[in-house]
Length: 251
Image (cartoon, rainbow, N blue to C red):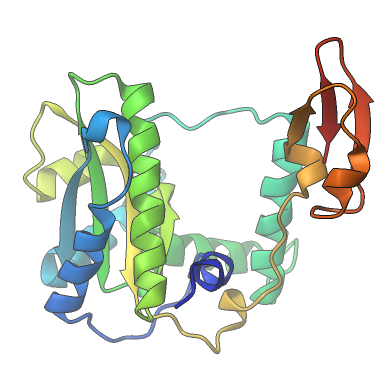
């Protein structure tokens, strides 16, 4: 598969087929993920793969904790407040997900069922936990974990699999630590559900949005550079913004 096709085709999967993943295929995906770049080639991530009956037990307990009103206590805290621009993107994808499932704004039962599916990992046959040693600089090593996750997801997509990064899988670390051999000197960073995507499910097919370059990129160019040079190869909406030491082109 071409790299660009894999990048654009990969998406978060929220409905999996009831089909196991061959062991050799999972090993191949994990081996590919090991080639993710990391600072100084430190490769700080540690990975735990969970399948079969241990995973099913976790799904049951994770869902029960949600519906039992247990307060989430992830070891990596999620932000409580998003800047307006980021919150808009977060809310937008949530609306698209619920609309694809025909869950209305006031359909509380429908929303609860969806959350239950989420905490059951959308019935994925495999869960991958990403751990870090507590004696590393967490903020720095987490960059490497993110690169590892993206590499893994691209490899999985290339092989016909799909996945989704799920904070819901690590909201209750006490459950994870009670079920699986996670050392006390490890931090549970994130979890990922992996499986065969149901390509006919509307929740896996809705139109996705990404921010334009004009929202996220500023190009600093030497004074005297022509914005037209950029326009020939990039987005035609490019506008030049003059700076004191150079020309910043906000894409």
